Image (cartoon, rainbow, N blue to C red; front, side, top):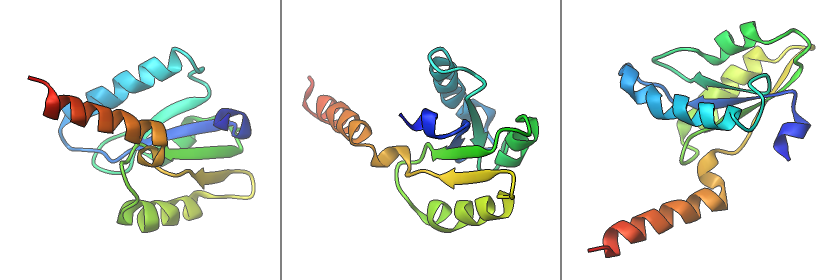
Length: 125
């Protein structure tokens, strides 16, 4: 299990200036923290809204040393190939390491669920 490998996991969404955009991500976090402790997982946004990764790091206890960033992105575009790795490199310290995981869109279960939903929409009457 990924959680056992890390002290904390930050779920990273893109962000939007529209506050309604955050609602599904906050609902997802609430469902996840219903299963996994709030102390082990938080939500951050890359841009345009808060909290940012930096905001989350400031709130974590100093002994939280090994942190994974799990992008809630469908694919690895420029943000995940360049922007986020550069950001995490700047945030890494001797006491704290941030590791970028593959985006959720790379998970075969997510791809299968999307395929099923698309086929259902295209074939239902």
